[in-house]
Amino acid sequence: MTYEIPAHHPNCFGCGTENPSSMGLQMHIEDRRVLGTIRFASHHEGGPGLAHGGAVAAVFDDVLGAVPSALHLPAVTASLTVEFRAPAVLGDDLEVEAHLERREGRKLYTRATMHRGTALLAEAHALFIVVDLAHFRRTGQPLPEAWSHWDDTPRS
Image (tube, rainbow, N blue to C red):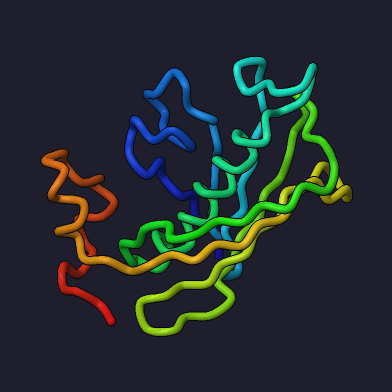
């Protein structure tokens, strides 16, 4: 079964639809994996004609962060490691894929890859820590509508 993942919130840097600086990441879930597409534009440029490494890392943070969201687990990034294999050329259609490797209590270990066709451009792994929704409520900002059905109790 496949279903689209809505933007984390409209102003999300990675996938927000109302943020003019958004990466424009579009994601869906298929077979327990988060799949996404990205096309880097000139405002993501690092080296001439190439995506900035920080832009690539931001995409990974967002797609890996969609894994806990897909599991209805509010979580925050504790660590993110990116290994660059080949340059991401501006304007190319790229695919990202992420999945949960394992869970140990509140710790979620995730992995992702970025490809252009069959060419591996980068891979990443991240550790997310499950938090309660109060963590996000402390900002004073409204929570995304998609989170309204999540349980609001701390998780171990």
